[in-house]
Image (tube, rainbow, N blue to C red; front, side, top):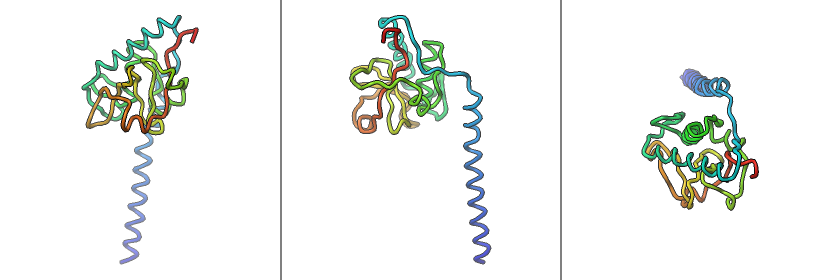
Length: 173
């Protein structure tokens, strides 16, 4: 009987490992076949950059109240990086990298003192991304329970803040 239990446990372990491989494979295929992306958008001057970033925030704010669904890029439902990608694509026509980790690796990092409306804000080891809305607030797709919302950079967000990144800049800055 102990041999049977051992075989059952070994079979269950093999099935769990196989299931993990199957769950990961579609993500790898999707990422490999994704459209070309950009991580930096330059505009002609500082005023133009500010207008573009403000429009990005306004686009994201219009999604407040939408559902959070992992892997969703809108319209109507988003995950955190999907909201970022949707908002930037809608305003600029450019497609940003798909995940928060890819975004964190690809954008120009900036100091908190240099952050501007429309910059990206990274949290939790780059596992979450939001759009800086100004005055210490962010707009983001929070989680399945809370959906897309505006939040203050306090509490959990302050304690897990990983840094800021800039996508839209002018030729001068």
